[in-house]
Image (cartoon, rainbow, N blue to C red; front, side, top):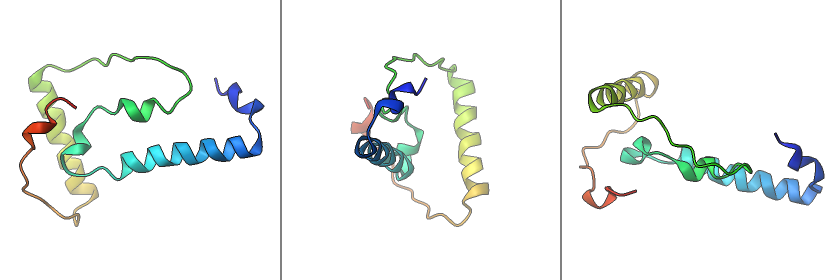
Length: 94
C-alpha cells in the first residue's frame, strides 16, 4: 500500500513527513466544537484517493455517542479548560 515511498528521495521523504505532521498537528490542535467534526482533510493526506461515505448513526444513537465522547474527555482530561461558548451558527456547513 505504501510502495510509493520506495521511490522517494531523502528530501522528498522529509517533505512528506513534514506535510503529514502538519496535518496531524492541525487535527490535534482542534478544540471546542471543532472536536466533533468529520475530518476528510486529514484522510486526504493519504496517497490513495477515495471518497469514503461514512455510515451515519440515527440521531438518538449519534447523540449517545456524543455524550460518551464528552464523558471520555472528562475522564481523560479532567483538568482541561472548560468553555461555555455556544456553537457558532455559521459553522453549520463545514
